[in-house]
Length: 401
Ligand code: SF4
Image (cartoon, rainbow, N blue to C red; front, side):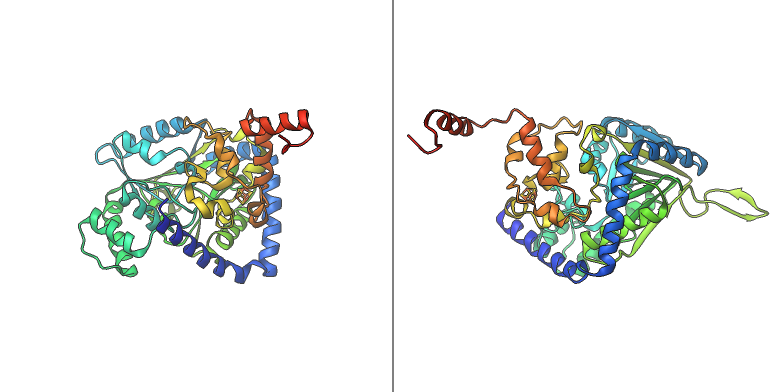
């Protein structure tokens, strides 16, 4: 990342931290945090049972279910579904989804001829940026770009002549995205949590773009298998905690709970669908190495508070991570994911093992311990360490000549 972008990122992180500090020590926040820690631990321990229960209840709720072992399978499923629903214009509108980021889903769908439009403002700005457009934070993907840079990006991409005025940029991008929304029959979203006993999923957001994506004729939800919890109440608790630690806000503007296609029975109690929302809802749960990863790596609620407090991330930015998995947790998860990208062993050693990520994680994911254990497991003997070891063995000290 360029220096000016690192500076801007840190400035944005400071704003986030100052918002967060007002609610971090609140008794309500701490109770919520304890509740979610228990939910995440129990859900991961019982993941297979919860997935089976969710499958049954999706069926009951008229939601189609698929499980994909890797990113390529996800793309195959989406391609088939979209070709059924929108064979002519191939526009897909998309809201934020870390799981799609993990598999580089947008790029893979674009390679297949689809036009995928990001609807989240930060993600859309990065999409318009065209090159060097990896996000820097889970809830603030473009937090490293100044308003001047964003103005140039939007003017270049959309042929506008905007001045660096925040609201004007927002309105211009919104109008451009809405042109695509109106022509799209397919929307893709992620899910922050999936409630097995309700056969429903919860999505937390501020912009209401999820309402657009989830009200196309076909709504496809993509999430990791680790996102399944027991109930809607638990799912909402996770969404609330994500708002607190991800955006410094006690609650986001919207939490959508979706438990099936749009329907009505208002005429003689005859069931008709769709009314205003999706006619067909499909859930794709992705494994992609999660089943063989460490349980504690799956507790994460994707708030991004670990990277805000990570000294390495603050020094080098999103180079410290793997694909869209940012920071130390990304490096740790990269050991387990079925992605073809090379997993750069050196990045395991970029971590200082300071533990700031664990301390600041709302569910106490012990990222530093996981990284330390992964270093021990691998064949990562550095030459310099070998020399130190030899010196100790032969001369009784690492320093003796
Ligand atoms: S332990 Fe590593 S990943 Fe965690 S905050 Fe410290 S440097 Fe970052």
